[in-house]
Length: 350
Image (cartoon, rainbow, N blue to C red; front, side, top):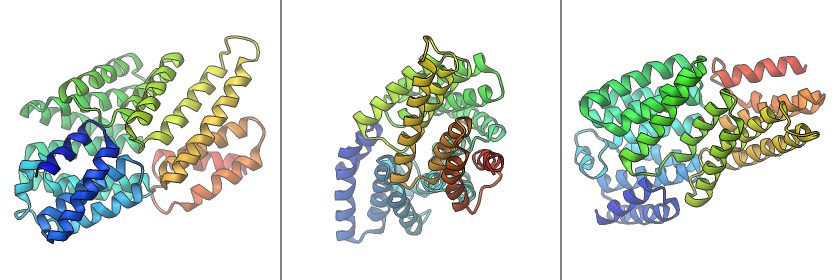
């Protein structure tokens, strides 16, 4: 279990290259011993390292294998080493990978399984873990009412049991939901407080690009474009430093959106055109990253942003040709904000 301890430590510090090597070694040892307990731990940890390193489809396959191996009573002892019940763990991360891969309804069903299992186990920290991932999933789906509801549930449970990092996580996403409802100042303050407290409480570096993206989005909503761009530059630097890439496409897309926002208030003659050109380059970069990762959800967002820009530039045929195939790929989730916005744009482009 020394190897597992080293691996978990690397994950918390977002040292994903080192973590990946250790996780592969762990799986090799587990397969050699044919121990189902050891195998579950190996699939869960290798899946996590692959998820954060952008190999989402392969990560999901490991989570599925881990779920198949899991037996509640038999694997309860692993909580001592992982801190979280691994049945809850693999289901929660499988749900996030399903969303990225373009299956938002399956993602919800998988996350529901994770929460129900944690409740049945009567294990508060595993329930807090499940709820934290459930709030993240609803935020990724841009479901504001659900994000508000589940962040409040998460914060109440975590405060009751003294789980400071999960209180901070809930506060950050609750702030995003407040901003989405138009409560800009209060929401942004909550997001900043939650982000600072989360990393002070955990000493970890995991999820930082994703959380910084939320903060940058918040700055954009209150018109603080330069501050938003500064936060995104920090997030992209973290991506390069740690190799945590599951949210990289969205960082480029958000940078493009903020550049467009800046183009509407150019600081000097010609600045608006330069910003628009840079925004287009950011959207192309977001598309390239999402396609490399097979992250259909983020590919849809990037394609929608670029198609909207082309529509404004009079390139209607190009915009429709870009967006229609990715929208047509989806077979579920048509009530989600991303797919609804893409459909409205496509109808306007016909």
